[in-house]
Amino acid sequence: MIFSVIIPSYGDINNLDNIINYLIEFKYNKEFYLNNIYIIYCCGLNPKILSIIFKYNFVKLIIEKERKGKAHAINLALEKDNSDIIVVHSADCLTNYKSIKNILTKFKEDSVGGVIPLSHPLISKNSLMEKISATSWLLLNETINKLDFEDSLLTLGNDIYAFRRECLNIIPENIVNEDAFIAIVLKSRGYKIKLANEAITYINTTKKLSEYLKQRERINYGHELNYRISKVRTSSFRWILIYKPFKAMKIIKEFIKNYKELSFHLFLLVYIEMVSIIIYKINLFSKKDYIRWSIAYSTKNQIKLIETY
Image: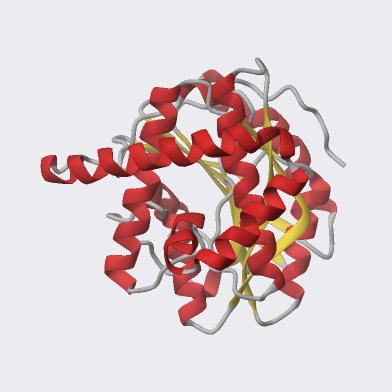
């Protein structure tokens, strides 16, 4: 099986060295062979990126002269690659060799079209906002765990995901939540989305309320846009809460059982989510640009965790 990795980056280069270090091991793997790594970098050159390009001939740099959104960045790499599997890897998170291998192993089942890992949110300052952000990631974990068990999972994400290249030629560039859109395309072609529950993405939590609200505002708009285009609702907890409340209650019960200390933060998370929905509904009238979204700079710090196996 041959795969390539796409790393969209808008100035977030702090983790690139560590990402390359665990991906390069697949150059010696006969079962899962790494073809190319594409770094899509916007608005200029950076000495660190140039040093990586010069060091590894399989790392390809694609320069975006103008920031046009994540879907556009991914499309630039898709145009150049014909590997069996595409792994999309955000530049501001880390995983490890074992997790990538677990993700790729899922594709041995012919019916699997996309794979998502679990997330491991990292808290550095133990602040209230970090705990709320971590709660949102952990609630997503509980949601995808349950839906995967039911074989009804319909989302990709957690900052790292993989899909069969043959299923997707191009992503419409007005798409905001490109990961969920790809999941819809895969499902429409008869493929399943599966969780690699032994694969972990290490993610910095958001440290500022203003940044978190902007993140959730964009994501909620993206889910609405995907639904208007496809008439399909993806596996977001919000949709489950509205349309399948009994299932949502079971997920919440399991979450509280596993993370009792975050029960209060879950209440605050629901309140903040309601506020973010109101904000994006208001901003619809101003035709706000969600494709080039505001950057959450508090999540761009280098992840100190070094784990390659």
